[in-house]
Image 1 (cartoon, rainbow, N blue to C red):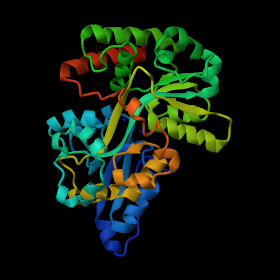
Image 2: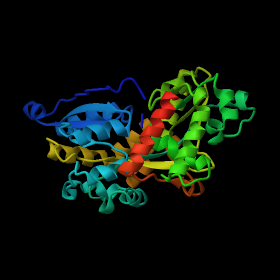
Image 3: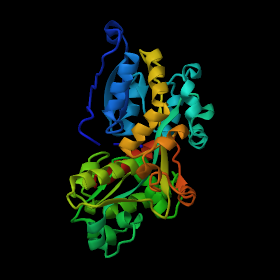
Length: 365
C-alpha cells in the first residue's frame, strides 16, 4: 500500500520536450499515484521519449483513491490502487480491461507476482503490478533498544502490548491511518485469522487498539517517513518501502539516526500496488503507453532503486542495486514469504463495522 524526496512534485509534474512540440502539447496522460512513489526523472524520460506530457497527482490512502473512483469523472488515465481494493472496484465497474496487444512489455513480468495479483484480478485483465511490499514495523534501533532493553527486532507486541507500548510513548509511536492495514496486523498478533470479520474478533482487535491508543502519537499514512528519518519518533506501523526510504534519508543526513525494518514473526500483510485504467479515462492510448513504458526492465529497476520496494518485473532484477535485491526485508526469504498474508476486500457490512471501529480508535472515544 507507498511513500521520499521533496523533489517529486506533490501535484502536477509536467515535463517535456519532444521532436514535435505540437504533438507534445496535444498528448497527455493524467496519473494518480501514491505519495513519494516514483523517481521524477522517470516521468521526464517518458515525456522525452514519447512526447506525452505527464500530469501527476498523489494520494496517501486507498480510501481516498476509492472515493474518487466511485464518484466518477476523475479525469485520471492511470491510477495505482492496492489490488485488494481494486477487486471490489472492478466489481463496481470503475475500470476498463487492459488492451494487452498494446502492452508488449508484459513479457518482462514476474509470474510469481502476476499470480498473486490474479488472486484478486482473475486473468490479470485489469491490473499490472507496479510494486509490492509488506506492512510491518519501522523503528529507531537505538531508541527502541533503550526503551525495551533489547536489540532484537520488534514484533507486533511492541505496538500492541500496552506494557511495551507505554515504554515507547515518550520517544513516539505512529501508526498508519488505514484500518485495512492495522486491524489485520492486530488480528495476526492475537493469533487470529487476519482476514476475520467476525464481530467477536473485531471486538478483540478494538480492545487491543484502545488499550494502546493513549500511547500513539499520530495516525498518518505518510508522515512517519520523515518522522523516522529525523529521529522524531522511535517506532511506526508502516509500509516496508517507506521505512527503507526513511532509513536511507537518515543515513544520507549523517545525523546518527539508525532506522531498521521488521517483519513480525506473527505474520504480516503482503500487498500489491498495481496500474489500472479507469473506465472513463480520457486518454486511453496514452495510458497504455505509460504502463508499457513502466514495464521496461530498466525503468522498473530505476523505480525500485529509488523507492526501495520490490517490483513485479522479473527482467528488472539483474539491473537492481545490490542493496535492493540482496535486502531480505525488500525481497524476503522463502521462510518469511510463507508467513505473509493477503487481505481481501471487505463486503459492505464488514466495511461499515470496520469503519466504525476505526473511528472509535482514532478519536479515542
